[in-house]
Length: 299
Ligand SMILES: C[S@@+](CC[C@H](N)C(=O)[O-])C[C@H]1O[C@@H](n2cnc3c(N)ncnc32)[C@H](O)[C@@H]1O
Image 1: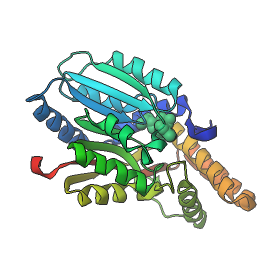
Image 2: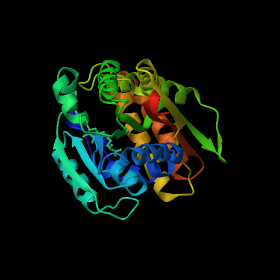
Image 3: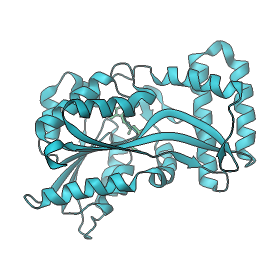
Image 4: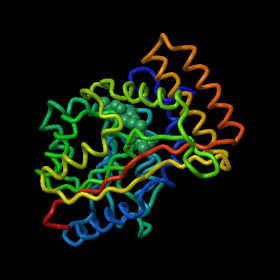
């Protein structure tokens, strides 16, 4: 399976496959912080509005809406109209924590332009009580994050950003992290370089996303909470094993793109790790971080 198709389009089946691992990994504590923030906002206005940036096929709304108080109005934003349509349909079938249906608006927008279009950014954020995103920030640049965070501060909007990769991953055996082979470490380094390629937002953050987000929110005086949200892909769960296999295939493709002269070494690494994972001898731990940030005066 190809995880990312041409022109940074994300395959719907890949996004669907990762949803279970995402839901298991996400920080319940930070979700509660988001819910508490919205509950406070509900004392002065109703419904509360949640803006989901790069919503894909709707994993984030599917996870959050039932745990958040309502009434809720969601604005789902993505540049992929097909994924956005799936997310919008899912949103209409969901309820908030009080079992009320949601208001859902789909907005087709290329988020890259927000780097230059501050009016567009203000329009998106002006009515948002909470801005959220999942699995987005490795793709964007430091400058893009700073624009977004500055706009959040201008509007007093809180942020809940889940599942930002932190660049750490390792194979596990019997539940413990197993020692890297030389080739694991080599793949990790080349993959990290590949993840930093510009995706149209400026030089991509890759595994630096969690620390860049944290510093950007602290710089505008926000109270910031971080929690690890790693994927723990143990071989005893079929879905987790398949996800790990898909993931290392995508990694091998990325390493090959970055270092085409090393085809033999990449293929040997991929075959060995594929066999280890498929046979259930090992699992895979993939580091992510979740972040909740809110204006200081409310903390
Ligand atoms: C890794 S997926 C995450 C999707 C979803 N948030 C989730 O957790 O499943 C990244 C998303 O970013 C969207 N995306 C990529 N580039 C974009 C852009 N320039 N403007 C808007 N959305 C973009 C993709 O279409 C995709 O839905």
